[in-house]
Amino acid sequence: MCNIDEIMDMLDWNNPPEIQEKGRMLAKTVKCFNVFLQPGHSKYKKNVWDNCAMILAEKTDSELRPYLRELFEWLADLNWPGTFCIWDRLKQFEDKEWLNSMLLGCIDEAKALKNKAWMSNLLEFRGEPDAPLNNETVAINEVFSKRVYELIVE
Image 1 (cartoon, rainbow, N blue to C red):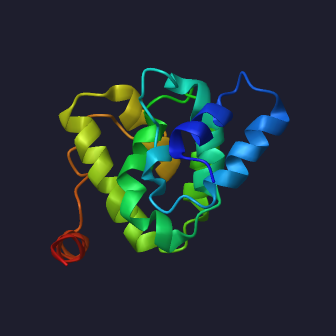
Image 2 (cartoon, one colour):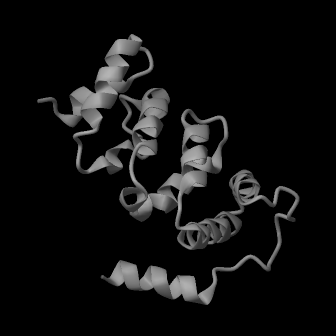
């Protein structure tokens, strides 16, 4: 059995494809898979992000649900490795109400941070690429905010 460091080593895109595939297969056994959410370890950097995105894309909606915010962070830069894999997986998420509530929260956060690239990408994901970036009408629906709060408190 491998530890997470060995798996991460295998996921590096500089490895032969068969080693990367072995790393992805071993990663399926990792229960605390949040380590694959854009790992920032100085050793791995973005060299593992493509493979991490593939690992995450295979998770179920219920497994990914607690990490939607972090997955939306991946859309901050469309040049980052794995971004379009994550984009496609988020588009497949079935609970559209939950997804939209998290998306609206991220749009608000991008606006507060004045991160125009992230906000533009989120609006594109939402299907509103021409929406003005300073649009004050974007807000989290009260019902969904309460739902998020209740789940966090549980």
